[in-house]
Length: 258
Image (cartoon, rainbow, N blue to C red; front, side, top):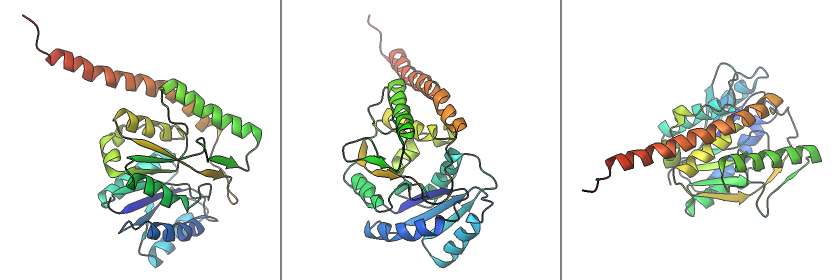
């Protein structure tokens, strides 16, 4: 499979970044992905997250830091991290939140799912064995409603389309035309999964329990939720155009009778 690179996007995560890095490194070691790396992508955090990340990178060989001058959204941060990881020789590329919403121990299970044949493994809250903790009823309804909306609009059977805990084979990221991805907020997660499914890659959902962060402030906002609501129909139209164009080309190339 090649080396596993874990991408950690950060913005004002000074209370979490060192803890999450030290928690996940032993898990990557257990996964036996030789040459594993943790790449922190910091968007100019004013709380000193970048300086802590630099200190970790100086002390720990497996840690790297990619500094960006200002927050530009979750999607662009991940795209920058993906590009850096692929150029660095990653065989697997993982996404994970830096605030312990995702259990670092589950990284091993995602890697195992890909080792078992999946092209993309998703940490899923909404398959049997998965769930959320520390959420009130309103947030649970909003989250489930957002996933249901995405499933219906995009005609996808993936249960947890908005989750951000993933493990990709490098071939998936190389095939889905990352430079053309435009989603910046949580619609980014939906768009990547949609592109992977449309490209014919296999997707496996691994049950996880999502937990509310203990330290720091959530980056979710009405603007981010609104972007997802507006972008999903656009993603559907784009996917339909892309499926129609190859079909039209095949008809044009087909020999005519007579």
